[in-house]
Amino acid sequence: MAKTMGIEYNILIMNTLAKKTQGLYNAIAVPYNEAFPIHNHPEHRQFFIDRLRQGARILDAGCAGGRDTNFFSEKSFNATGIDFSAGEIAYAKTKYPNVDFREADLLRLPEIFPRAEFDGVYTYATLDHLRKRDIPRVVGNFNLILKMNGVLLLCTRKGKGVLWTDDNYSLHKKRRFTLMESDELQQMLRRKGFDIDQFETFPSLTRKNMEFNLALCRKIKDI
Ligand SMILES: C[S@@+](CC[C@H](N)C(=O)[O-])C[C@H]1O[C@@H](n2cnc3c(N)ncnc32)[C@H](O)[C@@H]1O
Image 1 (cartoon, protein in one colour):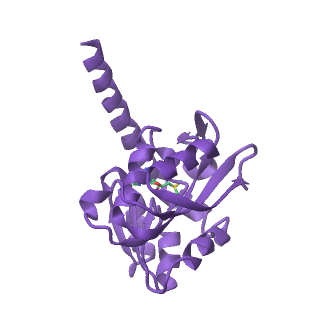
Image 2 (cartoon, rainbow, N blue to C red; image 1 turned 135 degrees about the vertical axis):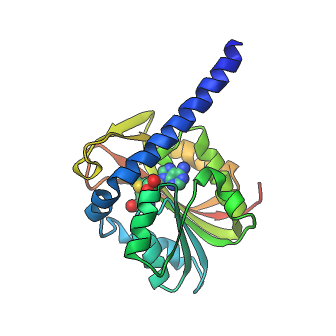
């Protein structure tokens, strides 16, 4: 009984966290996207597209207001942006009406994209919103939707445990981040069928003592 209650409790927490994150990004869509009209590290997007052929099929996983999906589209890639926040997707569709945006949860990617159709998956500052146990599942989903040798660029906050922040652009609503150390992230990526071509850490430009992991990987096996 206690075990059953424990499992139910975990599911409830997972749903609550996802719902809170969704609600938060719905509420902050305008200030969040207006705070970051320009990518802080445009060279990271460049690392990614340098590994892709012209016209390649790209998924921007956790696209928020669509800045990077639009960049990929303007570079003539066949890009789709997905996000589970209806507010973010509405913002993206209004700002970039000619780009393909869809409202979807990363945990359910294979239901939306049942075949390995992507040449590249780009996921920037997004997976750290998930519960730690869900991060490998989403990376596994990226494997499923990527073609063999497909490219994954993944950027997440680095460290141990959980970090809470609040900022002007989040209207001082608290955002929760699951931190991951570089070693554990790299091990997990390998377990999920990726070879790591390039790995680096870099400091946040906006927050003292915060660092990010950046991994540029290639799918080398199905899982
Ligand atoms: C910090 S923003 C990053 C947005 C963008 N990639 C960037 O670099 O500016 C994280 C985004 O991930 C989305 N997100 C978080 N968890 C998600 C999930 N499980 N499925 C889909 N989107 C999710 C949020 O709604 C939010 O728009």
